[in-house]
Image 1 (cartoon, rainbow, N blue to C red):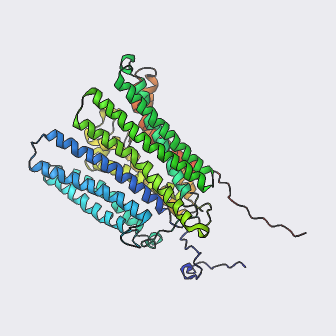
Image 2: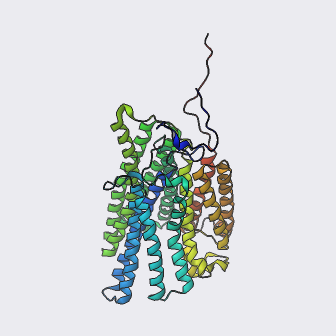
Image 3: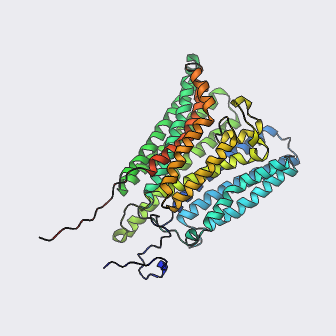
Length: 481
C-alpha cells in the first residue's frame, strides 16, 4: 500500500525508524556534511604545516636577536597553528565522533568557530598595535581570517543542519560517490601542479639536468605525477561503479601509494638538500612538504576503511548499499563553498588596503599589496571580476548543498562564466605566451600552470552536474500470464 504524506506534514513524527527526514528532495541523509569533515581535515593539515614552516623561518631569521616584537610574532603564529590543528580535529570529530563524549558530532566545529573568531580579532589587533599595520589592513586581515568561521556558523545555524548536532547518519552510498568527486577534482589539480613543475625541470639546460640533485628532483616529481594519476583514476572509477568493494579497493590503493610516495618524495628532497648545502631550514622544509603530502592519503584511507569496517561489524544487519539521491553533488557544493571562501579570504586584505581599484596591464605592474590577489588567481585585470565570480561560485555551491530544483542550472552557469572570466582576466598573459611561443618555456609554464588550475574546478563542475547517471536498479511491472 502506498501512503502519501501531505505537504507540510511533520515527517519527524513517523514511528518507522527507517524513514529519513529529508529537508529537500534529492539530498543525502547527512546533507553532505561528511564532505565538510574531510575538507576541514585537509585544510587544517595544510595550513598547520605552512604556518609551522613560517614560524621556523622566523626563528632562523632572528638568530636569537628577538625582542618584544618576536614574542608577539610567535603569539600570532602559535594562535594560527592552534587554529589549524583545531580545524583538523573538528573535521575528524564531525565524521567519527568524539571517543570521550558520546553524541557530540558538532562540538568540535562549534569550538573551532569560537576560537577562529577570537584568533582573528587577536591577530588583527596584534598586527595593528605591535607591527604598525594600517587600520584598513588590520580590518582586512580580521575579515579574511574570520570569514570561514563566520560562514560555517551561518550555514550550520540553518534548520537543515541543526538536527545533526548529536549524530551524523551514514548516507545511502556511505559517501563513496561524493568522496570520488573530491578525489577526481583534487587529483586533477595535483596532475596539473606537479606536471607543471616537472615540465619546468625538463626545460633546464642539459648540464643542469645531468647533476645528481636535479635527477633526484625529477624522479621525485615523476613519482608525484604518477600518484596524482592514480588519484584521478580512483576518483573516476568510483563515479562509474556502484560496487562498495571496488571503491574501497581503489581508494586504499591510492592511499597506500600516496603514503609510500610521500616518504619517497621526502627522502628524495632530503638527498637534494644534502647534496647542495645541509641546513636546518632545508630539513624543516622537507618535513613540511612530507606533512602536506601524507595528509590527504591518510584522510582518505581512514574514511573508506572506517565505513567498510562498520559494515563488516554489522554483518547481515548492515544497511543495503545504494546510490545516494544527490549522486555526490552535495560534496561538490561544499567544495565550491570552501574554495570560494578561501579565494575571498585571499582577496580581502588587498581590497581593504585599496588594491581593488588597481588596474594592472601586466603582472609586473601589480602593486605589492595585491599579493593576496595573486594567490587567488585574479589575473591582470580588476579584482572585482574575481569578487563577482566568487559570489557566483558560493551561490552555486549553496544550491548544490540544498540540491534545489535549479541547482544544476546555476552550477552550469557558474562553470561557463568562470571559464570565460578566467580567460578574460588572463588574456594579456595568454597573448604574451602566444607571441613568445617556443622561447623561455619554463617561465611560460609558471604562468600557464596557475591558469590551468583555476579552470579545473569550473570545468569539472559543468561535467559533473550534467553527467548521465545510470540507475542502479529499475522496477518493472510484469503481467502474470
